[in-house]
Image (cartoon, rainbow, N blue to C red):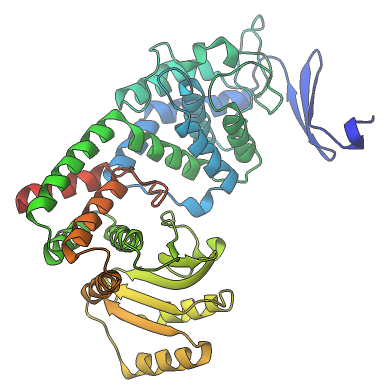
Length: 442
């Protein structure tokens, strides 16, 4: 058979008793139609039991409280882009059904990896349409998924569920060739299905990522974030000196879950603020990397980096609770061979620096070998250094820089500056703890 331009095109063949999905010339997925199999019944029971035992509730609660985190290194780039597109498409009128469906499909795949999430109908009734290996997604939606998402105000859905939407109920598997008209991020949803079914992405980590994005977009989060920002603006009119601001931010990280991540956010917000004052000339601060993203995969040297013409020229790594950094220094050296324009590589720690003779000697060797400056600084000394560089430019006062730093940090946590800091961990707990610290400090 010839195809347009003699190139293979994805296609779906529909027979009386089955569908065949051709993804490329060498791969075809077969979907027999009929009463569900005994194996499908076992899978459905496992999924149903997990939902009845609060699988989704527990995940939302643990993500919101910080007990669970997202391993973004286990999520494919296509899946990450798709999740972002789904959440960003959410409006009062469109996008909700596809997001709810995505949550359910990722739950099903996380609970029972062998269940195909393209097959949204499964029944023992011979008079009803069913795939032999399908699952009744409408039932799961109405009993478990929609009620849970409504309970936590993550998605405003009709109580009857998103699967009541007729366009999601066509008797065709969910593939790129699903022809029904769908409002919202259709392409992103179908890409997500493809990534999961092809095992390109971790279903559970992708699910946690999607839920985290929804938690950060929920009305409770927005209201709480606005309270923080209002308090922050009032706070800096009274406490605008560098020492006070630095102390509050350090206290916040040391009294919150995932303190190491907050130190990164703290440092990045100061570098971004200094950059906006003109401290680094034409160099720009690279957007903050996602939590637990693999440095080697993303080409990073450290947590905070300055770029010039797209090349890393300066890098700083936040090392919470670590004073002896020989291993970290050697890891950075391994990365230098891929970054020929680097001038400065530094490490910042919030504890006493163990500058043994061994480490001092090694730093000197590295500086000579690679013609770079290698620094190990305490958090306080690093803050002083950044302030000094910004003040030397003469476009901002120390008080203005401190104020802007604090507001930028709060905006990062409040999801107001995702272009600089795409923080995908649920930030509600961090916002609440910082709000409490500000109230006490006032």
